[in-house]
Every structure is written in C-alpha cells, then in structure tokens.
Length: 188
Image 1 (cartoon, rainbow, N blue to C red):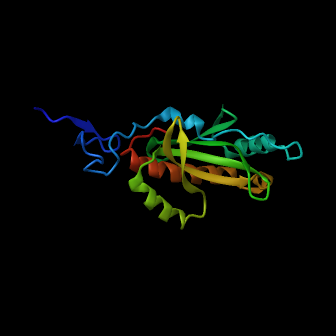
Image 2 (cartoon, one colour; image 1 turned 90 degrees about the horizontal axis):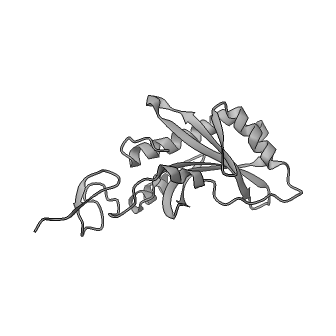
Image 3 (cartoon, rainbow, N blue to C red; image 1 turned 180 degrees about the horizontal axis):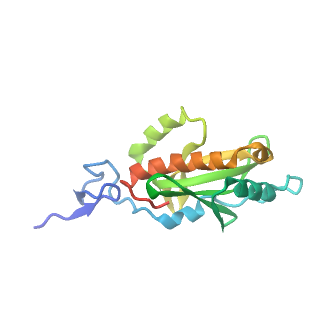
C-alpha cells in the first residue's frame, strides 16, 4: 500500500500524512497555503472616530502622500507599495487604528508577513523585546492567523514624522520575515 504524503506549505518537503508537524521545518501539517489576497483585511474593523476627534482621515492622507511611494485606496485606508532590494516589494496598509489607552486616535501601519505557526511565535516574541520601530503580531485574516508587522502612531503627532522612513522600516521588517517564512517568495 503506497504511503500518502502531504507537501509542507512552507518548505515544500513531502511528509507522511499522519504526521502533525513537518519533519523539515516544523510547520503544523495541514496549515493553509499563504493567501496573498488576505492582506486586504490587514487593517481590521473600522472604528469611526468621535465627532470631537481631530480630522484623522486628513492626517492619514497627508502621511500617506508624504511617504513618496505608490499609493492606492484599500478598504478604509490605503495600500502603500514599497520597492525593496532584489526587485521585491512589500505592501504596507495604513489607516485608522482605534484609540490608545488615553483615548487619542491612532494611525496604524500593518504589513503581512505570512501564515502564523507555533514554531516561530516564540522567536518573534523574543525579537519584539528588542524592537524600537513596530512589532510582530498575529492578525486573523480570512479566518486564518498571519504574522504581521504593526506600527501604531498617535494621529496628532504624524505631521512631524518622516513618513517615508517609517513606512520603509515597516516594509523592510515585514519583508524579511516573509522572505524567511515563504522561502524567498514575494507574496505581500
């Protein structure tokens, strides 16, 4: 009787179907294939600002335009495409991100890295402890968990920030993890 194998979504190595984890890279078997279209949900649910809040939409439009990258509307925010090394690109989604603990409106930058897995969670949490710009997180997109890079900025302060530098840092960080998780594919 032939052995039924299943191909790992991350490293493409064949594994025996009854195994729970890939023998090569440790990804849980049966994990979904990366869905490049899932990134369109990266900003999450829209929280309407309070009437007394500053014009967050205007602040976001100004920040996006100052980034200097290709920009298109996406959901309730914007998708900024950042060109990177070796002809790679990374999409960074920018939009309203609720409020901080003091009730100030936030501008959120989110960039998708790839499907989440238990093996890499601990490593990313360790990296978060040393990060100064952005952080790794998990977002549910189209019903599946994805690693993302998130940077939240107080909307009132974005006019004084270097938009291009901030967007590029988020894109670089996300693309580095995407490159590792996808074995060199450029999906997001």
